[in-house]
Amino acid sequence: MVKLVYLFNIFLKIIKKKIKILNIYFLLLILIDFFSKNLIIKKIKLYKFYYICSYLNFIYLRNYGIIFGFLKNFKNINYFLITINIIILIILMILIFIKKNCNQLSYTIIFSGILSNLINRIKYGFVIDFIDIHILNHHFPIFNIADILIFIGIILIIKDNFKILK
Image (cartoon, rainbow, N blue to C red):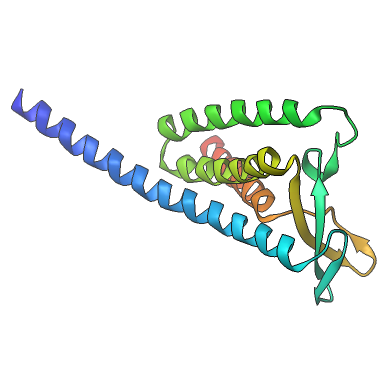
């Protein structure tokens, strides 16, 4: 019995340590996104761009839809997107605690990105996008750091799942 209690206490310590590490990543990623979006709002006027280099500009855009502005013209889409984001966040919270180590970080990165965009959507009614990558006159859709986090998290999950299939 004493051994079981001892093992349980060790297990709890490991879980608490993992949660602390994931919380640090989570907070750091959200803060980076939050400060970058606030800097854009304060320094760049709406629809104006700031030249960084030959392939990168910053431009302040308001995204009322989902990724790349899809669904932006639907009436009351904001409430629907808020609801969907909250459901996805709940699912991700569950996955963070039941998946193995390699996926926990991926899910935490995705969670951070979705929550950052959700905060924008609740606070402003839109998501702030500002990163404009282009090659000559061919521009990719404008995005933000939270979108990068979501994309990286998904790529990591896909990579981890291909390892499992091998």
